[in-house]
Image (tube, rainbow, N blue to C red; front, top):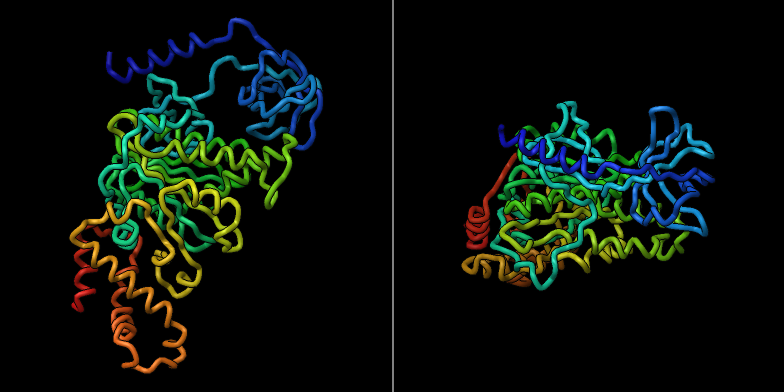
Length: 445
């Protein structure tokens, strides 16, 4: 018997053990928008529990319990509710929700339910069930972040050096190049596995991302979880949970995992929809209290584990109206270990990745930076800050050369530094190579 057959047999035995001995069900009592009220044995239901509502012979809609009101359970669907009527059976699932990932999932594209959507056949099941909503490792037991991780992108490697197990946010408005940056990281980062969660993505852009941005080489070492913007809020939220669950499986196998979610903002919007439908009071910009409860629960799952594996997290935040102080961006910035700010003005000048170095911070620096090159990195930041302070005067021609030696040097170095920060999506630069090139620029080479 092969190892694959053994894993399938182990998974089958576990599924048989979870089969219901007794079918417990309630009935649909009312429907208000996407909120469904179910009357029945409430003692058999719990928040986060799953139900299957039978809307037609042979067709059921999976749902999740999100709350209770009086003698009824409040549930929301994972799919469309066409055909739903009062009195439909709502069968309670006793088996815990989860997936059985394995290394055979690499190179595959799946939906938020862990089902393949790439037309490549069924997914090989792993032996162990992985829960979608696992608790983060205990703070006192998890290891510290590891050595610097080569991301393959010059601007990030040199100015916001990331360590294995670190969590960084990528803050940007729409159309500034977040997806292209993620694809560069997926292809070039020095990790064993990349797990990419596209949460609330435009349906048109999924194939474009897979074929043009990620490519065959990037997809071969990745697992992509997709929940498009037209899918129900529960599916969009679950896509983020599933992404972290898969990351945790590979982390516990001892792998270095690169976890990327685009975007955390759409996860928060999905949670807001769920909270408002369940009757929670809206707070700032309509976000409900559970949004700010769920965000740290999700993001804290990334990071070092208690064993050898680690999850390095890169989470994009779609800043509403380019306002970097809006509620979700502000909350996420306080949870993560650094932030990368992408600006529309830089993208409009044609420089990609459109990263504003002066507004971006890695909280592991300067420890994560090569000590030999830290003075060079610091000097480069100071030169860019000097040029940024005088930029308007320089562009207007109001600055007179020779007035300040520091400004003159910043003007002289600016074209070379701007070229250093510019990088094509097919190009990759190692950590060491980036440091040496920056050192050559600062030396006047």
